[in-house]
Image (tube, rainbow, N blue to C red; front, side, top):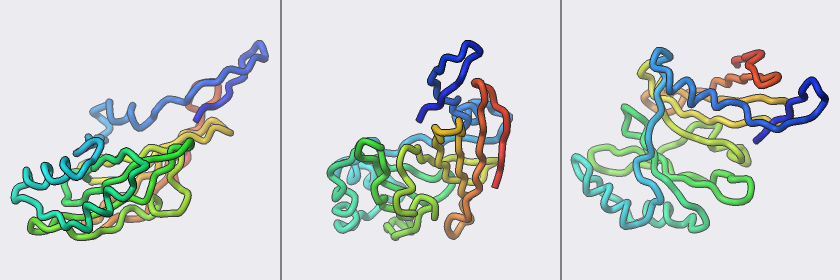
Length: 188
């Protein structure tokens, strides 16, 4: 997740492009916020504690707990999409820090209901060397996926908006850097 930068003297240095999403979240005037992790390092005990603390308390089916704990090779976190009843529990594993299949659900009347995550989070092999999170843009809940394309100094940010019934198609913003400076932005 690094890129090469040729200096005037011909030497190659390796730097990571700036974290554009972090900079946008830190700037209040952008209207972009980031969400914090709801439960870190998920365990069955932490899930039960979280469920009991809900208003109303959440009924956790044993199948859901088994499905979440089934990924024993990963340290998983639970994240909440701001302003919604949508949650995901997932984690990364392996030398490329690939996201493992997540468990997506909604809370309806104190009950857990299976849900579908953003399409780009569900594509096979798409979750390596990226960071996934939730937040808002102008108060609209969104799913973020950010990563670096080390070959050509790109910082890629995928944004999937919440529609109320699920996630809409992802929009991709690619930030290109030359000599450590932003040179071009492409939005698809």
